[in-house]
Length: 525
Image (cartoon, rainbow, N blue to C red; front, side, top):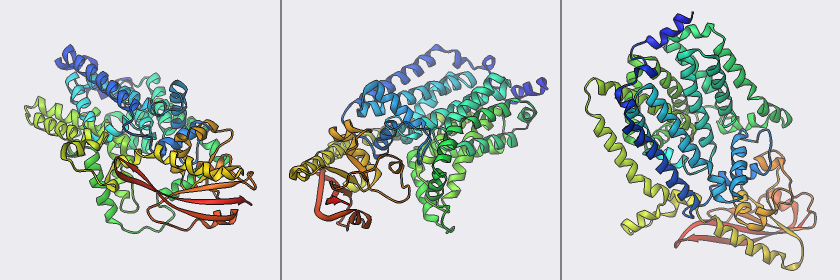
């Protein structure tokens, strides 16, 4: 049996430490790789510490989660909250504290993948990989914003690296680590079914690995991964399995299937841009070549860790809208497929890789500046990006919004009646809490800003302290909207009177980024 397992290493184009190319031992490539990782980490930390952008809705929302530790949450597993808890424990309740681990995780991922490529292919290929991921818009965003994708990609990639080591050596230690990383990936994002699908595809495509299915390793790894699901299962059992309902609604499973090709086109165009058009084409061609040739286990393994999830979501767009970031964990496996394919072709005399790299790097450099700060476009061209089309709008203007609401709130309090604030959306509620100093200090014991009440869970606020015990108090209802609207009927029924205070505009650098509608709510019933 052990001889059959070791035969995996003797497949065409073996990848092991003794078979490294001369480039892998060239200290020059290692120095370049480590220097690149260090410089990018420093640059990203400086950017995160600056004031160019503010928090996004989800970052502020999950910062609030970190103030309410739990086994799981309404829409996501708990690791994003734990990561934010650690960040704010180190740096306080600041934007830098919220985002600190995003650049750190990006650097850790880069180091992990660089060493993986250096060991299995060559150090030169490792540097290629670093340049590619640094030139990919989706990775640029993920290295700055602290979202669940940062954490989930980290553990998905760790599971891939450890998984390949498990396949090559059938080491029980490696299998245990693989199971743990898969479990941690699940605690970051609900991807366990995709992990299982990826392994099924790999064993189906690569026959030399199938004897492993008669060994205990894969099943021990699966058991460890399943044990990691316990916190989420316990929390959901205590809360009527609300996450299943949410995921069903989010995926459109509660609606009849209707053929919607526009979602397919929308998703495809988004991915071409986010993955860098040059490298998107390179990944596509490499994946097709691996599917046809299946020359060695490593490329088939990386193919299996990336293509199934991407293909699933791509097809699922025919049913419902799929957010472009949902495929984030597939990016690094697909880049590995492309880089290994290029390395193989280079050994066969292919010289086109320089044009591919130069074109992809040029695109990455072209979008890097505007992606981090769209104000660069105005400085270069003299033309401002329209507010409605500016991606920076999602991370700008929130401190001004909080200051405006605070001013209106103090006017409401002038009559001497205690008051509080109600937000129309989880995002605006979270951002107001973060950027309003008094509200930030009062979380979680005595909150000042609440999400509007509801009979059924709509988000995590449902499970936290509400405003129902503030009978007789007044409130300021804040809604982010483009045009004036009527207040929610439930809000009207909760108070003795609700008065429209009109629209307010939030302007940054002469552009209106957000519009708010305010309502004065008197006498909570």
